Amino acid sequence: MSVEKQVIRLLSKKKEVSSKEMILILEAMKYTPQSIRNTFSKLKKQAFVTTPKRGYYSLTEHGIEAYEFLASKENFYEKQWNQRWYLVFIEIPEAIRKKRDIFRKK
Image (cartoon, rainbow, N blue to C red):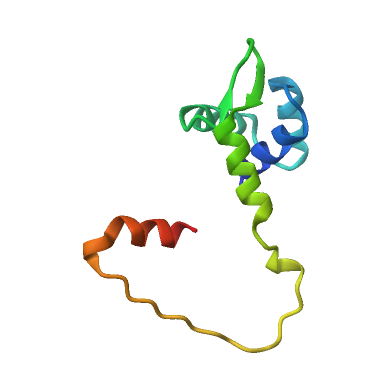
C-alpha cells in the first residue's frame, strides 16, 4: 500500500493525529521522515488532509470520501487464484478521453 493510502487509513481511525506520532508509526513501516512530510504536503494540496492546529492533521470530507472508496474496494490479494488468466480489451474512443481516463483510474 502506498504512503498516501497508509496516511489516509491511519487518519480515518483518529479524529486528529500529531505529525510526530504519525512519523513514528510510519517509520516503523520503513518510510523515511522526508517521504512522510512530502506525503502530508501532497495530501494537503489535494484537500484530503487539513491542519486544525500546528503539528496536527485530520481528514477533510474529501479525505473521508477517499477513505471510503479505498475501503470499499475488494481485496484480491486474500483470494485463492483459480490458475486461469483473463484478458479484457476495451476500446474507448479518443472523443471521450476524460471518461476513458476516469475509467482507467478506477
